Length: 379
Image (tube, rainbow, N blue to C red; front, side, top):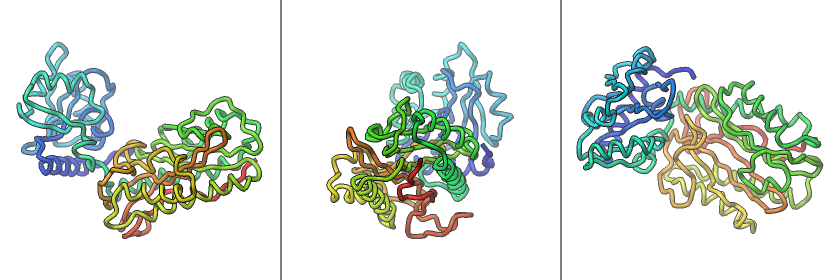
């Protein structure tokens, strides 16, 4: 992953502290994973049981608590201006961290924090309390900078190139797993350093939204759902297209047309003043009006960034306003048990005016995937 500058990480830390203060929190506690990469540009050599913790207080300077044996890695990394407090094996690492916290403070802590450490801090500071970042600071990483959007656009372009290539290959007579392996190799050849999923769901398996590719042989007449993505230069891609082996039936064409219209409606719902649930409602209404409402069984979308699934979520009840720079999927689907499924998914960025290399769309969502939405017929 191409590193961001120390100044970028410092600005992110300042914004996080400001958001925490506005929420009435004492600070943000960041543990290894995407949050630590976002705020410090650092990933421990081994994300094991030893405590690594970045403390972002609302009223002081950030401090990193690290195992002594990993302190050198932090010092020689791309991290600037951060004090590091090292602890050694045999020492109570939670007591070391507790000295940097308010005894009665309420802190946001990374969703991926180990229970071992959350409970250890709670035991050491009984009057303190902790809440998942997603719950109390859902916008912490949701609005992307122009540089982040550019990386997401490049990742999406790589995924589009994969689709363009995979549809030139033969499907009939091959197992789902073989096509899945092709997708994996193609993602890597188009700039992805990490592949997170390559779902290939043929025929009746398409009615399972998260079906794992298996030994089912693809046949003439199958609808095939392909959902694939991963990380390129540290940022995610995630796209779904549904292809067909040979000519479609009228029913298959009808269902695909409904999903295509629903996907367009979801993208069109991204306007100033819209909330996340408005995107879900727009897509869902199209499918319900066509008589397939009970067969749309998941949320319409999820955020994407340093991970392929992160806040915000496009789902009923999510009243978070859509903000400029939010990047998320719009992926409605219809899943007919015992028959087939259809899903179409693009990553979009909200109100991306001024993003380098990305056309202005100041009052709308801009797709970061541009591969065909109509059914592609494959052999």
